[in-house]
Image 1: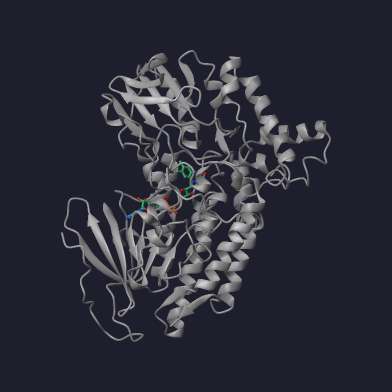
Image 2: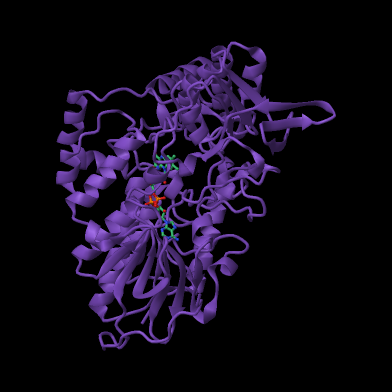
Length: 555
Ligand SMILES: Cc1cc2nc3c(=O)[nH]c(=O)nc-3n(C[C@H](O)[C@H](O)[C@H](O)COP(=O)(O)OP(=O)(O)OC[C@H]3O[C@@H](n4cnc5c(N)ncnc54)[C@H](O)[C@@H]3O)c2cc1C
């Protein structure tokens, strides 16, 4: 296989640069890739999407595990760029299940006739910047076909923040004779656990969604927990016709109002300080949020993520709920987290803690009794000579999350000016201007990249904001007759310093979470998302564009 990019690109003179095969090449057919294609094509650019999977939907194509659903409410977790689309689409539940969200992604592809400009089962393996020609040479690896190269003026990574599954390197992993699954790479055909002994490894968001569903089928379910996680009830329910009509009557205004909120979804505004309220008032406020359900819980008070004592009040409230829900005191103790609430991503569940009251469910704390190995018959824990145990299983589910935010980008051989590899540029952690562009990598954009609010917000409006910013930028370049844009080093350094300064002030950066890369051995510990909230971020992006793309070199 020839690893070198072919030298010649077809040439014609537009902005003094050779004409590439495509104006814009988009990697990924999740919600970011779909909207990019629609928007860029609408602006008259020759755009094409390449997607490793066999269909659209990204996250919702891959994460088909039982119980998978969004935890931002569906009427907010959906596109707003097209009024007719948001009026026509009918969400039936407060939090839609994965098949419904996938159906929505397919509907968007149909509705905007996106299919002809998308190629599936095609992995983008490399992207090399050709400085002389001012274009990207991109290596495609179609499943079962010969690799090929395609050229594009702009390369846009819509590769997702949570798209590279993390499979832990547990000794003997391949020796297991039963079936293994990863929640983020779930098979398309239905998996039936009826009558089986199932082991679930991990207790993050995907585990917390899938465990109640698996427990209902399995003969026996053993959950292996490293860190207990805070979870609040979703209080999911069917959406009533009247409430849907009320939202739709005012959809635009509600979406605009959401953009004034930190996470870009509407929640009751926080009260100023948890410590300023009496214990009774505080409990009442937490109780009200608990009953409302979902991520609104962390919006109870402004200081929950800035003051340890304030945070502890919320943590105590949730621990008390766990204690009251779980019958066995020892299991309850293991399930009660001890770290800062909201430091790891808050989980949203339907009957998670209640599931541990089922006679077929058992919890193993692997800090107390570490997994020694995966063996042919199941999972071996503890010291082999001293109280060790082999837990037999017919299936193992790895709910072990993702190499988040940078993992997918670093798996592509991206080389910028002078052959600089992104992997090297980011060796000590990601460095990006606005989470959108990287110094040394001209004409490369990252949608919801590290250094942008991304995973701390409702991702749909954050995706839309990035897509619109990028496509407006490319249009502006065309208007100026310019062909190349690159983030300046000084602007990037200043942005990274700003991102770090904000992160350091928050309790969110204080624990071992995937936000800081702690779930991946050897990954540098850097708080990756921008923690200043959507409104401040979007305003800064708009200012930079209005100032003629301040901090970018354009030629
Ligand atoms: C289980 C789960 C639940 C979630 N729930 C919510 C929620 O409730 N609210 C919320 O705001 N966010 C949620 N998220 C985050 C979710 O990832 C985003 O909301 C959103 O779907 C991301 O869209 P995207 O297009 O940016 O990326 P993705 O949906 O991840 O799509 C990226 C695509 O790029 C493809 N790709 C990657 N690398 C390559 C390559 N080299 N070559 C070709 N193709 C490639 C991938 O196959 C993938 O299909 C959830 C995430 C998960 C995992």
